[in-house]
Amino acid sequence: MKKLYGNKAVITTLILPGILVFMFAIFLPICMSVYYGFTEYSGMGTAKFIGLDNYKEILHDGAFGKSLFNSLLLALGFIFIQHPLAIITAAVLDKLEGKAESFFRCVLFLPNVISVAVIAYLWKFIYNPDFGLLNNILHAFGQKESVNFFSTENAIWAVLVVLVWHGFGWGMLIYYTGIKNIDPVLYEAAAIDGSNTFQTFFKITLPLMKPVIQINVTMAIISALKQMETVYLLTGGGPGNSTQFAANYLYQQAFKAFKYGYGNALGVIFIVICLISTVLLNTIFRKKKEA
Image (cartoon, rainbow, N blue to C red; front, side, top):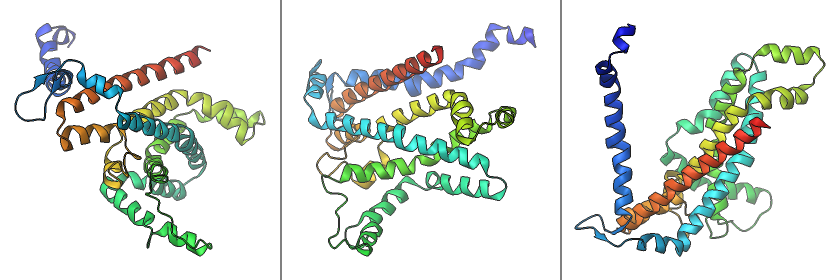
């Protein structure tokens, strides 16, 4: 067996399919995207090379700036609202036993199983100003006028609520798995020493969950940056550009406005932002580990 795996021809045969898939499915499209980012191209005809003009236009594109700001708001919502609640929920689930644990775990993860299209249209009905559930609840508490949740002032907050709620199950499940992998002996030793629930959570659970938290936070920020489907189906980025997100704006420019070259330039900027965010997060967590 060692002789077989030491054979360079065998090694090449094993890794070549993966390399080819990476080259043609990932690396080549990225290179083409970089090239088209320097062109004026509608997706049809001949691409006209225009140098850095697309990138200069991006610097003055208020809609793209708004989309990045909304992505930042969503990332903050994930980190400071969704994830703390997900960790607490996972810790509570860990204390449950039997059918109750399985039942609540399935119920909390259920929104992630439902189609994004169904989720978007469900929340459209919930937010509806005429017969929506939220307005009916407000009327029951004495609110006379209906609230337009998709107005320019309210739309971004309405969208953020949906996105934070929809992604809650994934975060909770990852934290739940991380807690389950903590050695129960540590909890038993803490109980013998007289630690209460809060001391155990902050002194044992959270410190041992740092690798899981790092992965989850990194995924949350990348998810916030590439958020598209739910926003596209819920508001389409409107009204105006109040609920515009980076990935959704990229799609609209490339395939609706037929500014394919400009859309690719946005895509390149988008990839660079994702890479910088990932490197910064890894650096921050690495420093915390060393400290």
